[in-house]
Structure formats: C-alpha cells, structure tokens
Image 1 (cartoon, rainbow, N blue to C red):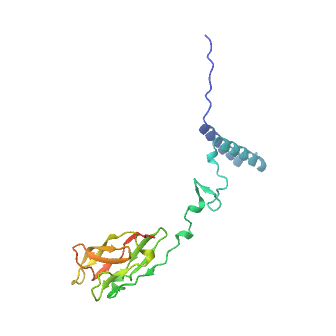
Image 2 (cartoon, rainbow, N blue to C red; image 1 turned 45 degrees about the horizontal axis):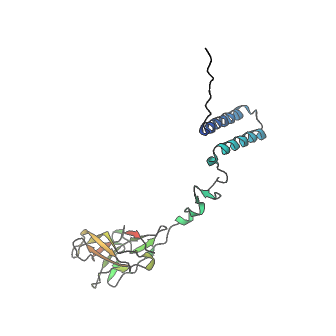
Image 3 (cartoon, rainbow, N blue to C red; image 1 turned 30 degrees about the horizontal axis):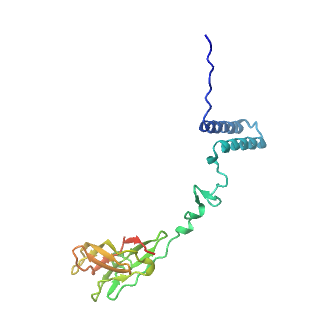
Length: 206
C-alpha cells in the first residue's frame, strides 16, 4: 500500500510569537538557575528574539515607550493631547456677587457663601445657601461671563417656602444666557427665603 505524504501545515504568526515567548521564558529560567550564558550572550539572544518578534508582529514593538513622557504616540493620538497631572490641578473657587436684597446665609447649619468655579472640562459648579432679606428682585445673582451657559437652562434646586421657619421644597432655577439666576418653587411661588445652590452644574457656553 503506497504511503501518503504527510503535509505539514505552516504555523500562524500568532503561534510563532507564542512559541518564541515560551522559548524566551524558558531561556530566562535556565539563565537564572544554571548561569551557563554570559551577560553578552544573554543580550545577544534577547536581541535576536526581539528582532524576530518585530518582524513577525510589528504592532508589538514598544520602542521609545517606557514612559508617557517620552512616548511620541499613544495609539493614533499624540501624547500632547492627553491630560496631564498639572491639567487636573484644583481650580480656584470664586465668590458670587448677589443682587440687592439677596445675601449669603453663611454659617447657617454649616452652609457656605455663594460661590462657583469652572472645572478643567468647562463645567460650571455652583454652591452656597442664599436668601432674599429685602426688596422684591426675583433675580438672585448674575454670573460672570465665563460662567454663563450657551442656552437658557431650567435646573432643579432646593427652595424654602416663604413664611415658614424651614420647609424645603423642590424648586427650579432659571439660568439665562446673560447670566441671570432666578429661582422659583415647582408650584410657581417666589423662592426667596432660602435657596441652595449646591449641586447646580452645567456646561459653560464659552
């Protein structure tokens, strides 16, 4: 009976890379336990293996990428487009000037004054507890130019109904493109006795 020729299938590049990695691991173990190879010989072996890996799988090359500081490219984007530690430094918080008759209720139950900041991603954050002590101006404050939205906003807030010592109610804060901040309760009443600015955030328009 004639013998059929045995056809050997050529291994895939992935199999070759895996095999080379196994050989490198085994060689490293042998070097560590037997010390049969000298330093120059080990470096020569590593150089040959790296050359073959790069030839078979160029995408695995990691030359010049030991740290993000020296890497020229990370994926398809330049390293300069990524945020660094200095970019994420704390942003100064600025006090907000209130309209006539409105004041910050600082110190009440640990509350802070009216304040705001714009973070590194262009999001404005408001904070503080305010109230209207006199007058009838429904606009509590006007935000500086760099803290104003591109469109008119209606954001949820916590109000205190007039005439009661403390009765927090859900409210709405209207923030206009010109920076005017006017609060009302969900029932339409004037939210002036107390208004919490804490948690009000939106993307700046500029």
